[in-house]
Length: 282
Ligand code: MN
Image 1 (cartoon, rainbow, N blue to C red):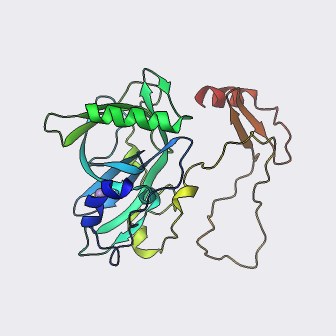
Image 2: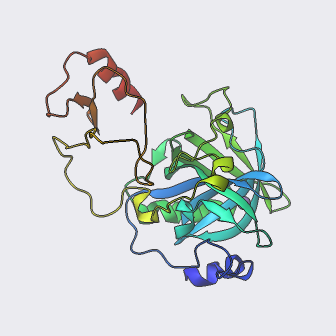
């Protein structure tokens, strides 16, 4: 049961003193498994990599954060399992509490075990079974679909059994750039410093990733439009972006590739090379 697996998590925290979520088993889960990387300004700044498996988030503290280069093996110290709800947690853990300091959701998305480029994004139970088995053996190959980090990685347990190495596999997502230079939350857009000043609205975990039964891909969508207002305002459920002139395109992605459509549902046929390039990357 998830409760038992979270005994260590609970023992370290007082839920009347920290805004972190108390243990709760997730509802019925299907679709792909979730991963999250939280940036955490605790006594020492680090990145917490968490992988959904068996109703909890298996967790590792990565002091330097993930690297996209296979030559840069990152130390990943295994820590206690965290509740599923923790994946969308960002905010401030108060002074005096375990792990005191600011935390943001630095990256999140879905993942699958990766066994010689075979994946289980669409088979939740089998994906979990394979992840649990691989972790028990001390070597997991997995494929991340995040916003900042993508592609195939390995977690390899070292002889001391507590420390692991996080290693990027060679694939087309290898990069020399340092992903930790991107320092904003993928949920709120806030940096760790801004968390101190701006109250964050907590996103329910269920909205972090696709959930619910799968449906046919729609052929059109009605996106939000810009609105007129008397004056500028600041509300938590709004984000601001510079207005750029050009085409607004909706990308429809399926196994056949990427199709770009206007908001009226018309195929934007003038960008065949862009569609071909996006299809290659999808
Ligand atoms: Mn941490």
